[in-house]
Length: 533
Image 1 (cartoon, rainbow, N blue to C red):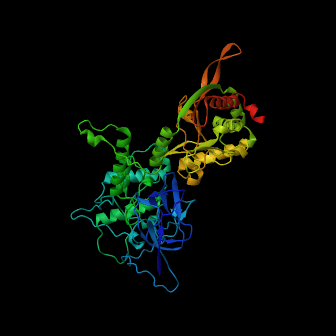
Image 2: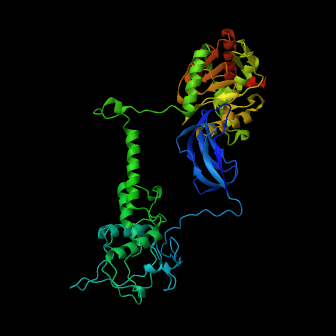
């Protein structure tokens, strides 16, 4: 058996480190080539790391949340060659034989609502099928009345009555043949509405004497058996009646709770843990301000700067203090763009595709860049190695769209956007947004950008002065579109108005060039038919 160690690779261009966010495997798992081993967060995005070889995971060398440098070993995998000795594992503790499945078998005649043959088992969530056969109840000394089966160590008679009545109103309880019934004290039913009483059958505890068994059964064990039976019949989420009542009191859906019981049932401890977590989340959401009685240093949250946030901070500082920014603004009557978008939304060609004014702006930016090529360029400070600078004009449009994600700001770009039709561009924008929101944007999708759009209007902002993305010389801020009074043909009428804000690298883009470019973009928003030119 050979153990191979997998070193953290460079998943992008020039990345030096990454954080292990989440492992998808654990020691002992068998992996194949290209199976996902873990998720890592680089300086640009969240990336799934595939396995370069097949075998069995022997050790995870880096814990989740740790940042390591490229080339560091993060996982060890053995190649189980034929003839190798099988790994020695500790045998699990012996458990009692289980003859019945988790939820048991219950033959039911749907038409009659009765069980099958009298000998058919009624199996719930107990440890063995045979345990469902119940022994005769031991009567207290000096009394001729049998004890009720609902009295156990975890709940009261009233608890079980409420559980039985509520469950009977939801699921008709199958009845055994009358010959199998034994005399027991009647269980008082909870008040129900007339409509509910006509639907719910008479639910009573039944007693089945196991032949050849004379040892008395305790009240706690009898209650546990009945609790398990009802849990298995009524709901696939296993829980005893007292636990169900506790969940109802807390307003917790049992399906939302991770069960840790031996048989997969939800325990009281599970509910307490779930409630504590929920309370902590509510406290964090509803009470941002720290208690004034605490010292100020205890009311400061310290957030490590890493991953995407670290890369964004470095890039923005570099851009802001390297490229001299110049910003200009223009108000645009986008009423015809809004009408055009409305027609596209009902078009059969765009059925199932999200269409917004951003699509028209993207087309406008591509169109205007072709008329003003210098805005689609890069300033290279030391092109010849001797301090000589040059301007590299790009004859392609890798259109960047700034996206706010849970991990920070990302700017993926649409490669060769100039070659896409309006429909293809709409599909590309939808795919870009979906990946960004899911944190699945790959580093290659954020490299080689040529010009960026930031859609701040989606947040209701009129305009802004955005910072240029490194490696580019222009960025457009798309403000919100809203109705405003507008003078048209000498009359003041309501129109759909937006404000475009543009930031440019003044080393490459002069004032007149930036003005012409912005005017061309505005012209398309005012009259989308110009795209046919």
